[in-house]
Image (cartoon, rainbow, N blue to C red):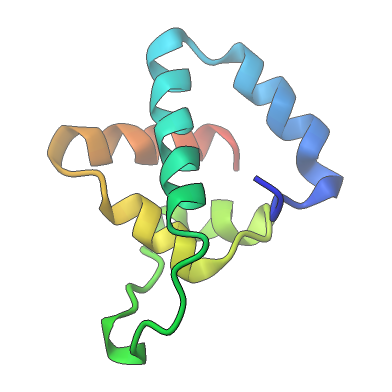
Length: 92
């Protein structure tokens, strides 16, 4: 994730290493989604998702692009969405 704030890169890596395999899998899926939608441009403003409050601190801290972060989050549904929120809170 080239947008990741370099100041917090070491911290991110250290926290990532401490995650269990299920948590690593879900954060990797979030990162894949972020990268997958990176090149999508020209989405009308009214169709762009807003960053949900549950992940806003994570997005701000690591200076991620807001539209991509929100899109990556909303790919998850139900229980999986609850899990990604829990995992991202570890990084706050």
